[in-house]
Each structure stands twice: as structure tokens, then as C-alpha cells.
Image 1 (cartoon, rainbow, N blue to C red):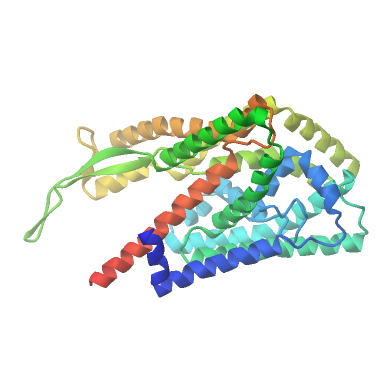
Image 2: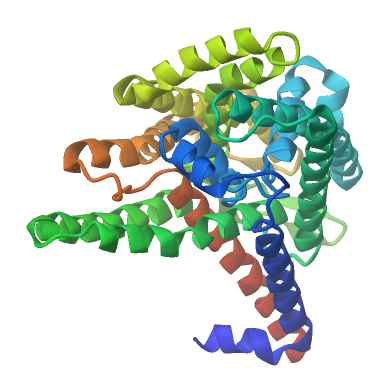
Length: 423
């Protein structure tokens, strides 16, 4: 509570927090403005019967369920970023820009992501509108009206991308993550209302068990997100001039969950990819697009098959993302250059091998945990038979991860200002 009050006592930090809240308010306001020619009741019925669009609605902050100006949310930007990160494996120059050129390279990478966001938003916007028309969720639109709506949706995607980058500049958490966080949290009151509306005394023990398990799962998510394996590192003594340096012992922290929630996003993106292809085919053949969508929906409608595929993809992508972002050989070289070594292990390849094995073992626990939490809503709904109860899932992982990140960044800024006060 003391730290919370300190935020509003420091003018600079208070201004940053209030500006972030202002932009989140603008985001929620725009997410409530629908595009022209939409029937909310027909849309609500369609989304209640389609689990796939429920996932997309999560990332749009509820904007997709009412076809708002921000119906795609940060989805196109996330997709563009994922595509470019995958391309770093193929193109060494792109990898060098992303990982080795520092702030300038990351700025260049972000610029490419923005460029790619625009065509993806156009394609996704047209595909969604065409799919919803074919399913009867919205009325058939004349071409001028359809083109106008696609332009508005694309503009909304670019606008929300810009708002996310503005929020990031305040250094109170990542802007894109905070927008997704705000969208998820905004749906909590409706979920609570639905749970009370379907409540009956006969299921009271189920609700009590659900609350207890929810607390346990949240504790587990925090524990795994904050968990790390510490590898001891010692530094050799070095004489430079008349001074002695080194001779200290520290540790190399290896997080249990190196990838964060990125594997979840990757897995969802891959599960949505067939749907994305079906939307793209609609440009050439609307009939074939409908057939492909029917096939995809049959697969996603099977809860067991869908949950199994989702779990496997999360585990695989956790290892994949850790492998492309964490380089044991580079860490070993950096340790060797600075005179550091792992006690009992030779510097160089032997050190890299030890780090790689340790990362592989810790990643296993992180990957399995992410996979279990991701499919936990489907498991709880199958066991309880109550659709209103959805324990765990992507939303919980994102909310907890973003809350921890914001908390750390605020604490770091408070610590800096405490030091400045002492100086």
C-alpha cells in the first residue's frame, strides 16, 4: 500500500500512470463503437457457438464480438511480429538486426512489423466479414459498404498499434500486452454475472472448489513465472594497473519459463492458420472458403482433439521459442570474455553444453505447465459440465504475466527515484 501511494506522490510517475490509464480508456471506448450495418443479436448468437472466434475475441478485447472499429485488436500486429521472428531463422541479416544491433536493430525490426501489419489487417478484415456473411451472422454488404468497412477496420488496427507503442514509451509495462490485459479484464464483470445467473444451490460445492482451485492455479502461475534455476558463476582475479579485479562469485539466472506467453500465442496462431487460409481463399472462391471453414470447425468442435492439439503445440513452441531466443554458445562466449566460468566446468563448448542441458530440463517443466494451464478451461468445463466456469487458460496467463511485469517496472522506477533522493 505504501508503494501504491508513492506512485501518486511522485509527479513524473503519477503523470505516466494517468496517461496509461487515459489511453486504455480510449481503447475501451473505441472497442465499443461498431462498424455500420451490424446486428448485435445475431452476432452474439454466432460467437456463443464458436470457440475459435472466442479466442480471437480475447485478443481484440471483446471488440470482435460486436464488430467494433477495433475488431481485430492487436492481432495483425502480433501476427506480423511472429512472422518476422520466424523469418529470423531463414534470413541471417534479419536475425542480426533483431538480436545483435541493439536498439537501432530493434527499431528497424519494429518498423518492418508495422509495414506488414497493414496488409495483414486488410486481409483479415475482409476475410472475417466475408466469413460472417456466409454464416448469416451479418447481412450481405454491397461492395462499396464492404470496402468502407475493411478500410475502417484496417485504420482501427493501425490506430491500436500506435496506442500500444505510445503506452510502451511510458515504461509502465509493454503497450501491446497492456491492451490485451485491459481487454481480458473488461470481460471479467460479464463472466461473474453469467456465473451468478447460472448459479443454483445444488452446484454450491462445485463453485467453492472452483474458487479454491482458481487461487491455487494463480499461485502456480506466479510461482512458475518467477521461478529460475541459478547456475553458479565465478570470475577469475585480474590485475589491471595497480588494482585487482574479479575474484567474486555470482550466478546465472535461467528462468523456468523463458518464453513467457509467446508459445500460447504461437499455438493459437497455428490453430487459426487453417481458418486464415479459408478466409484468404474467399477472395477467389467463397464456396470453397465455406467448405474449408466447416472442416476446421468440426475439428475445433471436438474438445478432446482440440485440447490435445493445443497442449502439444504449446509444449513444442515453448522449446522452439526458447531455442531461437536463448543461445547457450553466445552466453558461454560472453562469460569467457569477461573472465567468468562455472566452477568445475571448462570455459567454451563444455560450458555451453552445461547451460544447454540445464535450459532443456527447466524448459520441460515450464512447457508442461503452460500446456496444462492452457487447456485447463476445457478440462474444467468437461468435468463440471458448467460452461460458465473456465479455470485457467490463456487469459489468466496473460493477466498474471502482464501484472507482474507492470509491478516490476513500477518498482524499478520507484527504486531509481529513491536513489535520486539520497543523492
